[in-house]
Image 1 (cartoon, rainbow, N blue to C red):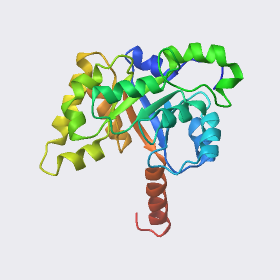
Image 2: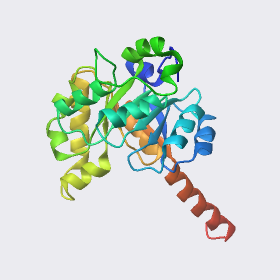
Image 3: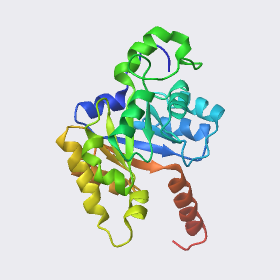
Length: 247
């Protein structure tokens, strides 16, 4: 993405709407192109747990088309965040953020000086650097993940971080952190309430389209309608069952 651009997912959330994304982990640029045909609100490329390599991610972001391309980065660092944005991503989802200070560091890593510490470069930004830099100040989406016990305790402070565009809940890791006897749903709702108190959009990872719809009805503004691993695993199993008359 070069020059001036509008982050449509961010615009929708700022207007109070919800965004249903497609989450891609398998590293397939072709699958990203297929996903873009349905024009999801966003396409998230999982750079933390997924199979993406640098060149394939660069190509897949271009294949996102009109869907807002976002990257879940490997770590909360200037290098990881800047790399994803240099490929043309219009935003980042930063994992394992425990404090407001860490959230502020993520925001700063996504912006050029004087607003942050991002390094200038990348094939796409360099195509029209001046308008790109100007657009970044308002159009780059920065989201941090709350998925630990410490992050839950600091949810209110994290949500209030200046420049933060969204808090995204990772219920899988949060459940591991809290243990089997904890009330995970109460924790999720507490994070949502902390975000609502400061008018910051809150998202949550969802594992079915039905769950995505339910979470949107609860007030979550960013959900996962489908992910490629679930789609492949479920589709193959269903088709084999039908072909072998085991449905």
